[in-house]
Image (cartoon, rainbow, N blue to C red; front, side, top):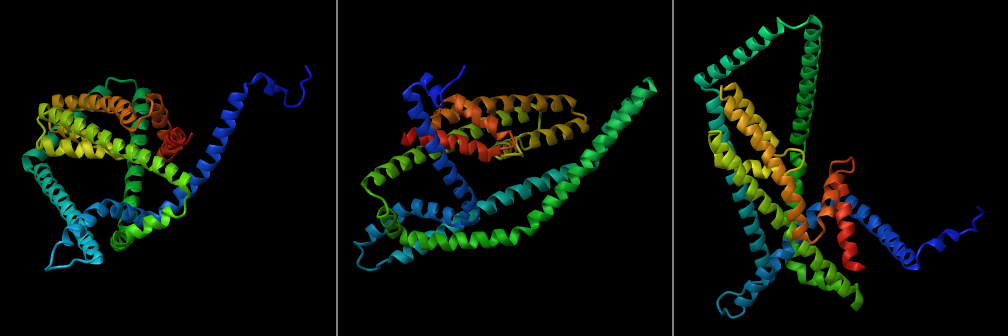
Length: 361
C-alpha cells in the first residue's frame, strides 16, 4: 500500500503527538543537564557539600545573630559566627568519626582475640580436619571422572579466590594512595563551608536575580519537590536500616553470636552501601560458626540472610516509593536499572527524570 509521507500520523491522536513532543523536548534538556551535572559534580563535589552545609547552618547563624542584637557586652560579627559554626561542625564530625573508629578497633580487637585464642584455633582446625576427612572419604567411592571434575572445580575456585585477593590488594593500595587527595578535599570543603556560610544570603540574592517571576515559581516548586524527595529518601532508608538492624540482632542472638547488637548495627549500615551489603557480615559469621563446630548457628545465619534480603527488597520497593511520592512500579524499574550495566547512575537518571517531569509538566 502506498502511504503518503507523514500519513502514519493520521492514525495517532493529536493529543498524543503533542505529549510526545513535550516529553522528547524535556528528555533532551534533562539528559544534557544530567550529563553536565554528573561530569561537573566530580570536580565540584567539595563545594556542593559545603553549600548544602551552609544552607543548613543559615537558620542557626541568623538565630545567633538575632539574639546577639540585644546584647550590650559582646557583639558577634557574621564572620565570627560563621567561623564558630564551621569549627563546631568539624568537632562534631571528628568526634563521630573518632567514636566509630574506636568502636571498630575495640570490636575488631575482641574478635581477633577470640579468633587467636588457642581453644578457638583448635576448634576450627578440628572442624576443618573433620570436614576434609568426610570429603576424602566420599571421594574414595566416586568414579575417577567425577573426581577429576571436582578437582577442576576446586582449581577454578582457587583461581577465582586468587584473582579476588589480587584485585582486593590493588584496591587497598589504590585506597591508600587516595588518602592525600581525600584530605585535601576535606580541607577545601571546610574552608568553602566557612565562606559559603558567611555569604549565603548574598549568594541566594544573586541567584534569585538571575530568574524572572515565573522562574522563581518554577525554582520554588522544584526546590520543594527536591526537599520532599531527599527528605523522604533519607526517612525511608533510615527506617529500612532500623528494621534490618532489629531483625539482624534477633538472628544473631538466636545464632548465639557474640556482640549481636553492634554487629547488627554494622550489618544495617553495610546493607545501605552498594556492592558490600549485609551478605558480607552474614557470610563471615556463618563461615566462622561452621568451622567452630556450630553448624546449626551457620544454618540460622544463612536463613537469616535470606530473610533480611527479602525484607529489604520488599521495604525498598514500597517504603521508598511511598516516601518520595512515586509509584512502586517506577521504583522496581529503577532498581532493575541499578543491576544493569547502567548501574546506580542510570537508576538516578530514570527516577530523577520521572520526578522532575511530574513537577514541571
